[in-house]
Length: 232
Image 1 (tube, rainbow, N blue to C red):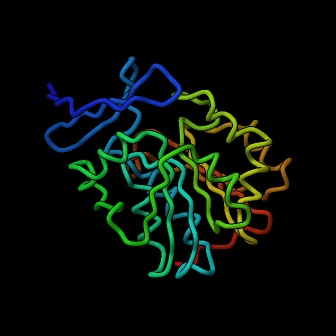
Image 2 (image 1 turned 180 degrees about the vertical axis):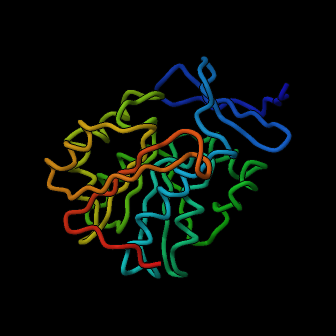
């Protein structure tokens, strides 16, 4: 039997729910306090890595790119983006839940290499949707992992990001030739079609949660022009 230590709870704003962090012998996981399985784990982060690296690898201006990541999670998406980008890049991570930021500053951060300590990192404590509205034409990459995907799980207001209005607003926050990336627990043809109706060319990538086994997650890459091939 695996033994877990409860490390703390973090309330989810605008809901009556909280996230709970647990530590085992070799890993951590986060779940919703009210029940259900784990939301994320330090053992299974292949798709989070891919969300950070896939769009950044396609940029021509990797050395000085401006990237927005919606959802800090366990820090793996942020770490993957930073490892792909150059010394003058700026990566803003928007996280709604203050407790998640504190967990990543503490022992949890060791698993992803403490990316919050990287001088290229900026933390925006608040709703990523608000930041998107405030920064027209600013970001070269916007990578969103704020919930379970288009089928929201933790917060109903996250649904706006996957609506037509949310997609258009996110599109307007992109610099020319910018790339959007969305993480999802699984495929969603309706969302794929919605991206295309908003004028995007869409590439759908299936990524294993851990190596070449386990759950398969979906990442959509969307661009108003042809999506470039990876540069490295």
